[in-house]
Length: 59
Image 1 (spheres, rainbow, N blue to C red):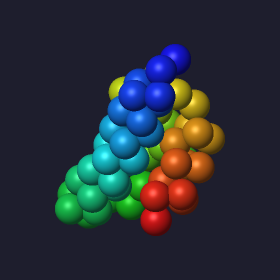
Image 2 (cartoon, rainbow, N blue to C red; image 1 turned 90 degrees about the vertical axis):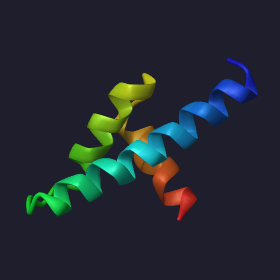
Image 3 (cartoon, rainbow, N blue to C red; image 1 turned 180 degrees about the horizontal axis):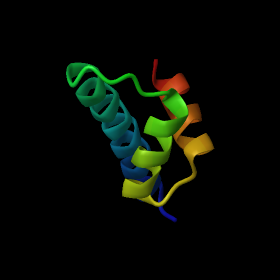
Image 4 (tube, helix red, strand yellow; image 1 turned 90 degrees about the horizontal axis):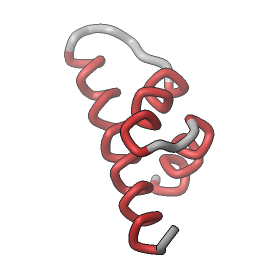
């Protein structure tokens, strides 16, 4: 996997994680980080653990 693809996966996963959490919050539904990570992971073919690690590193 090229570095560009890795960077895209990482940034897309973090962005989707944040969007999913924000949308759930606006709808008045709480969502755990793990559940949001699983949803975001599906967009970029990654594991939920990878997404959570990327989100933590991005903050």
